[in-house]
Amino acid sequence: MEDISLIESIRQRPAMYVGSKEAKGIATMMEYLIVDLMSSANMEEVDIDLTSDGAIGITSSAIDADSLIRKLGLLKKAENSEGHKNIMALSVIIGLSRSVKMEVYNGGKIYTLLSQNGRFETSVEEGYLREDLIINFVPDTDIFETTDISFEYFCSAFRKTAYLNPQIKISFSDNLHNDFQQSVFHYPKGIFHKMDMLVMERAVNDIPFRLDIEKKHNGFLYKISIALLDYETCFHIESFAGNTVTYNHGSLINGIKKGIIKFTKGDTDQNNDIDLSNWGLIIIASVSGSEFTFGGSLKIELEQPEIESAAEEIVYKELTDYMESDRDKTVKFAERF
Image (tube, rainbow, N blue to C red; front, top):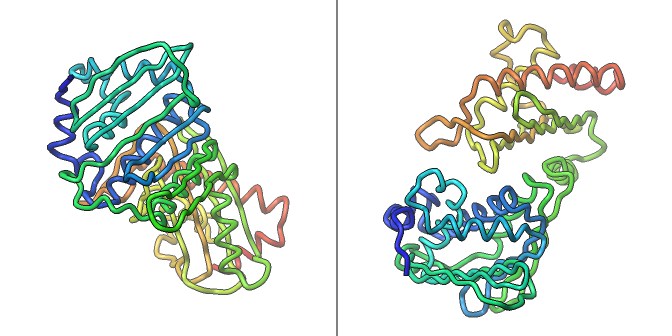
């Protein structure tokens, strides 16, 4: 059996890696693994199952098996900090589970990892699997205060992941509880689909204005959806940096607001105190890129001036361009403020 310092660190300080020792922490480590497999192993589809014996199963055939095999090799070299980023998500699963069995199929061989309480061993043998990747793990009851997994909460977590990563299809089933349940999360339109749902839920009639923006700028991808309801009410805002919810918003939303004010009122320096909160405005926005800086004691506010400046200019330009194609709707939008 292997015992490596990274996994021991995870076991000793679990909250540092997944935030919570409740079921929310289990959902976080699953989201962490899914996002990692999307980026590092090009995973496009995944099936997740709460099994009848209390384990969590993850399977996929739409994945790059070679990348998974390299991860298994890196686990043995985890004393080298340069390798931690590539195996962090998998190490969290190993470190915070009572048991893990991971099998990767590639070229007539089965690569297997077996783990108990953070100690693991790997092996290779000839064989065939029905999937390219099969993981079964049982969260450690000595680490998590509860492992009673709510199907509804996990659905909420996976729905968010699918909204922010339009390339992924997540199928989730519950064979653990008395009533079998199943949901599929796949949103090719990403957060713009989320806006579709909010508008259908909240609008009385046709809305007067809707603008969806997707732009790359200096290494970041901005997705911004702005809608105006057909009646005046308090605004609704959701924002994300990477796969993190920024509950206190920060730079991205500040920039979007400034772009709206610049378009409707002119110079933002003269109109910073304009209140946009009671005009039926809905904003859903995400920014993706390599690195983010979060502020505040809870680290739930994005603090990056370059993102704020970029968002302001993107929104201002898109509103200006939209006015040329549909002046009537844009005028109605501006008049509301």
